[in-house]
Image 1 (cartoon, rainbow, N blue to C red):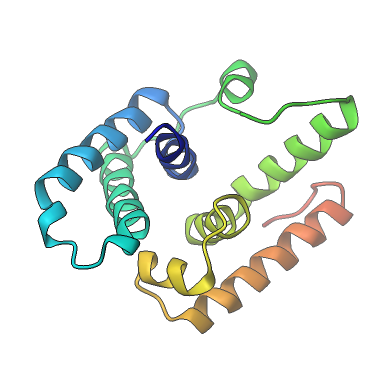
Image 2: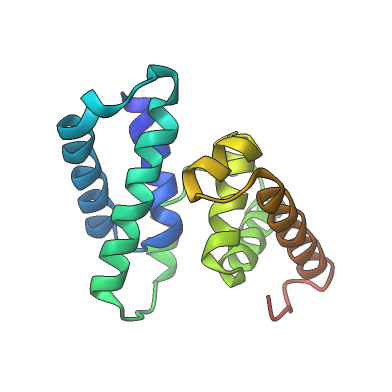
Length: 158
């Protein structure tokens, strides 16, 4: 379950910035998963199913909070699980994170689920209730925005 917990944390982190909110979303997700697990018809879809619950819980918390706050560099640094071997990796990672944060929420979640969590376009479509081709199109466009922003040194309007 530890591996799943890390994945849930990463997914919730896309929508929520505060660790307390992230853990609240994970806790609510876990409670709902235990409560409704009998309704899951095919066990192989458990991960997709629980991430869908988490996204809904994260969105609920985000809507309740519905306020912006400044994130300190320390918070950003403490919430990254990337090991940095040299300063170039730090700069590239920070650029990527900065640019991803400029994407629309839905585009960000697609990029994170596809590239970091290794979900297929079909699975992401099931999670977000979108068609597989829509996911492919949105992912391609988001990837182009990221690429363009990286080429401009992060000076993009998203």
